[in-house]
Length: 134
Image 1 (cartoon, one colour):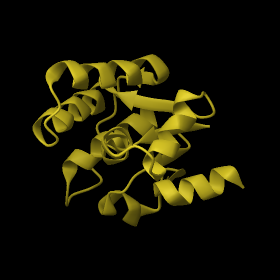
Image 2 (cartoon, helix red, strand yellow; image 1 turned 90 degrees about the horizontal axis):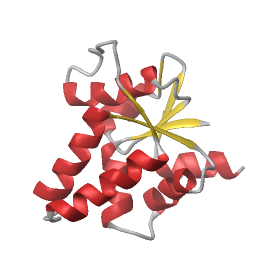
Image 3 (cartoon, helix red, strand yellow; image 1 turned 90 degrees about the vertical axis):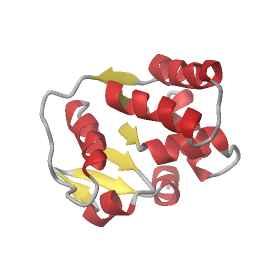
Image 4 (tube, helix red, strand yellow; image 1 turned 135 degrees about the vertical axis):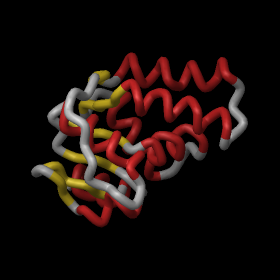
């Protein structure tokens, strides 16, 4: 199964280990799901870890490098303009579309309100784990 994890899920997995977001990320680390990420999302992850959570550059780069090793990095060609309330969320949709993802795992209310987009399911980490484990 191909999945895009929103930056908020990745940050939670890395910053607050032991929670549901980390459990979802571990599925990718273990190869049980195929993670999809774009260069724009990798840049955002590094930026959020350093500016909002005070990670030093080396630690943030190591986290981003780990993700690039375990995920398929896509370079979206189609520009999406779906989330008018927060256009930055469109980067998640672009990555999912480009990587033929089946699911987007997010805690972002703008994305979650869609529930699905172009046949890509959009769900919370908890709901994804429940569904995946059943």
